[in-house]
Image (cartoon, rainbow, N blue to C red; front, side, top):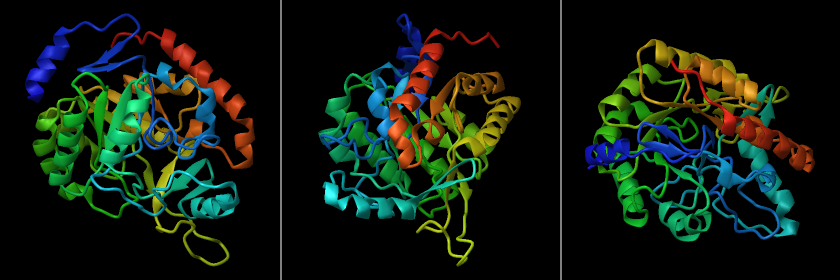
Length: 338
């Protein structure tokens, strides 16, 4: 099935203004990273809970693609909550919850949400139909090949081929306390061929990403996301206890940009030819250009662009203006031939 899909899509020519990464079609080379924009739309009428407040001032439909929060077979509380509507008097409690799973650290952010999400069926029923103006990448995660097969089959049944950009396999998250090395080959061999949509594999810099990239190429994956967050730890200097409820968390933001650049460069130096969507510390067009020079085909905006300190969100329109400026430049950008 996947082989027939690839042959069909490769013959099609991208329309003007589109970018083709193998059999993945993007509107341009700038996408959004998983989780930062929730499910691409919010239920709350005033505050867009689950989405960065900055996103309210940015035209999401103009991005190459918008990546969802990682979705699992069943709803999952993780270390946070699946609840997406809060009354005003409940906000102090909500902020306290955030403090246990998300902390600003030097040069970035440490998070351990633990794949909290409403589940794939609720997403497809309640959120997906309301984001049709966006080009979407649906991020999925699971703890076995069987779970990934179920996720792929569920998406196939609800989403016609060509209606989304891709399905991203998150087989590298550190916030769920699971060794994905044990399942990655079975996930790729069993779930990728079943997908009616192109599959992206999200790589972790803490795993053997070169080996995983080669596995991806062998099993028909269409592209790579490099990189996922970096496993990290911060302790309260007064008590010695971890800042996050989960102990370890995923480090993102500008602190990991040199790591992301290194991983992309090493993938290319190792002869990996799959398209790469690079992420890690991107805030400006110059950051994007560095990743293109390192070998990336597209770039993804994560916490460095969408997160701010709580008081800092008052400046959301200014943060959004910077993102719109990057988006305009990317829409006009033509990478040099390699």
